Length: 245
Length: 347
Image (tube, rainbow over all chains, first blue to last red; front, top):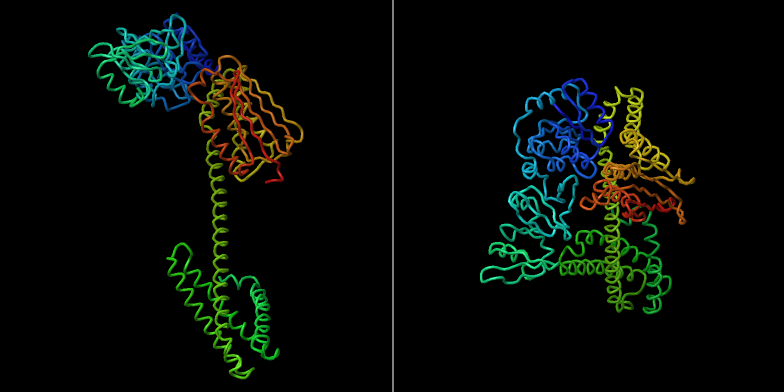
């Protein structure tokens, strides 16, 4: 079994390495000190199991999980018990609370070995359902080896493209594997409106509405971009904007 | 208790009647043409009577607080009691006059005597209302001060219970890792952790500690975090001589330094610096700065600070009553908290 260790504290990584050393059948393929490294290493090494810290610089453990491909077992390792429910939602193999005993560690590892090869749903889908309480504050997107962090305040609009959403922020576009429905659920509904089957718009970017045909309208954004607005989308929009338009 | 019977005030009160008695003698001697001896003989017992009646107004005043009882009722009650008091004093005046001076010659001044009695009684009523108002204000002030003191203590208690449990869990995890890697350092970390916890416990009874003591506490906290974070954490301390003895509320800086670690250093990939500086400010107070490197992008969505900053702000307010200021600033990858404390003697 190939294993990856992700923790921003060196001592914590060394402890895991030491505990894993007793198992000759386990190969540590990567050790990462932050979320960026973890996403990159996971793509390159394709480990079977990741020991994943939650609170780390740049990306937290759940964001890392959202960005790595399916088929990876995850054991969360953290001092915080508050993430246990979310960990359960993303089908984590186990949840180790720091400090943990050797026995507890072995039990988690045995669980992971049993589940090896099991088909788990894609993490991105799970991560969307396992959101932290409250609305999303930033969206993370993987672009090849790079990871982009987009604060939702800088998100202009999102467009559905099959199993992906195309996010536009400051004129740049980012493709993320997620359905537009699950993205809509994770965003603050007072700020982001589903104006169309395929579009979510940031309310702050909408400058005006213009008629397009007899039955439909378009929303004009501050950069001149026009987005189609469905009838129900128009109702949602006017309900929120009130007299503004 | 009646305000006139407290702490030997009654003598003073009687003394206040002397000029009134003099004025009355003058009135009798000049206006009613009574002999000076008779006038004095009448005025003194006479004033004594009123002096004994007037204090009773206190009880009527207290039972009829202004603004709570209908004004009409208050006016009627006091007018009636004033009339009764003045009536008693007029009867006494007539009786005394009949002893000291021939009847008839002074009948004419009885209405004037009655009026004076009314005015003096109502004056006493007015004075008692002022006394009641002052007492109520003092009581409210005392209650407010007590509430503030209590709030400050509760805040401190809450803060002490807040030696962040996750700090403990993470430290224990580091110790757990060190036991096989470097047993000597594991032991050192146990000692540091024990020392830190003991010193925070010991602060329970104190309302203020010296800046040097607080700095030592912060140093022992940072020594533990230093083992956890290794080369990722660099600490710089600048304490100007003359600041060490300055008294501050305990655990004033520790939450700020903990914020600097949790929201600053822990979110950085590259090594970061925490700078703690204390200087005497020109006004005689002390200026303290806690500054740390931080990831501006990560802090964009999640405001650094949180509970720690709020509680420090509240405790400064409770302890210095607005004379201390706390300012935060972020820029160029640094987050800075600056506390300005007033001169100690002004506390």
